[in-house]
Image (cartoon, rainbow, N blue to C red; front, side, top):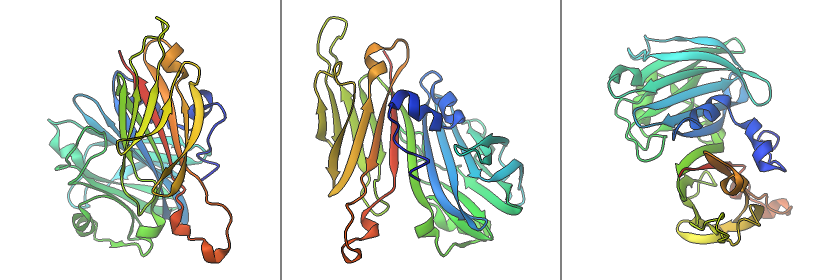
Length: 318
């Protein structure tokens, strides 16, 4: 995971190459929010990355699922639960050069049936199914559904990745059993989110699988740089200021270490374009839990460390 999501030395130019093209192109459209979640799951006998991207604009929600190592456009499986929503298949390259295929679903309020379907891919010659039901999904202000939905990935007649809270419905529809390692092997390893706002940027993240879901807020003062006024920036976790950067025009790139529930988290920021860019401008924030110091095995609990990384792209609009 470290090689896939390493912290770049120059955030603006380095990190962009790791972002999936579909997410980047969608998010940079006029005010379209997007979040990409990268999971690691046991698929076709190997640990593979599954990338789930959610997009939202004023009229539609969109979902894309891609599986590392899959090839071809995939095929519809209308026989699984009688679904068969309208989706599109595509091929691409993962960040490490491995091939992957994706199914894309566009959810428009006047096309109810598109929110329910299934698709099958071939991964190393084995069938892998992606099944979803978003007909009753509830959304908040974020692109990702808040509740009442499921997205399941099935490999070897086992559910190896399951998103959403309708777990019983997912198992009943697919007729598959949960993988013995479903809770342990299917882990969220990366979240990349695009947020649009004037001066306050919000997201939520869980820095540990068993930890609390934290509210993250990044707020920038309304100081006028052109008029020679100072610009300040505050990073808050659950409403408490953890990092305060004064004179941001002189400290537009930097990093600091904060503590979240006794876990050390490195925070990196690059706000250069906020201050000196033109048009639609973005700043990049990276939150990366810090590996604990080397201790004797009897004193080290692997469950206390998370290999998760959050990339937040904050787009400033006027």
